[in-house]
Length: 342
Ligand code: PEP
Ligand code: MN
Image 1 (cartoon, protein in one colour):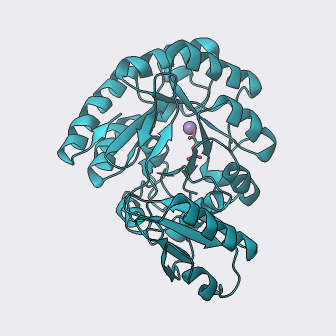
Image 2 (tube, rainbow, N blue to C red):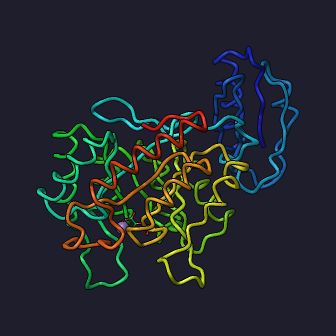
């Protein structure tokens, strides 16, 4: 259910409607738009008593939301959501007219490695660096990430280079630590339907980067974002990172068609990760160009100064000079579409 407020409704009127919704035992989500505020109602198992809400001052109408996902849906908010990520050098913006580049290693391996790559990310013009301190690995014998010391390295990167930090939380136990250190919390493909983790991320104060599960349908992907938003965290950025298919010349098959499909249904921004989407260094640039051209709100890319020695995902890490080329080309393509890269 959605309560549409009048364009001139006062903050007090919005608050009063929210209070009435909560009195009914439901949860109210006030979502300001450019022309009016809408209040999404969740938690209702049956019909909501419309009479009491529709007659309140400032209310234009109450309309049912037809999609299973509510807060994520364009029905609740027409215009694209713009997510701001705090960095020491000002906000990085994802969505609307702004496309973003998030670059960095798959995993934080050491202070030297992270600093070497951070320097390249900053010099290429990046504002956001990715890097996992906790790594979900297929084999228990593979490098699992440095853990807490890795977060300390990321904290130092932030201080030294002024970059905003994007890092993955793999479980509810360590999400607090990641939240404290990172500027954006990544939820990985393998955890896209880890509902307790999604709920915890929904109570976090930092924006969430939610990656599509490797076998997730579009509806499952959007419902996962709904879990985060339903807890009150509206700063969600989606990320397409490839899905499993019979095609075996790449690690995954990058589903670029999902970008316009998501944009038709949801106001949330969506990035593309051509690194996990292909698993091959020489395919990252071509797919990055395609991702920006198809209308993605930015790229999540793995980069390494010495991929041969990388402890994780070296075969898909691009080199620093390729990062510079990617940045230049992505910017030009974005411009054609009336957008800027930041
Ligand atoms: C990653 O970004 O390093 C990662 C593990 O990605 P995904 O969850 O998409 O596999
Ligand atoms: Mn990786």
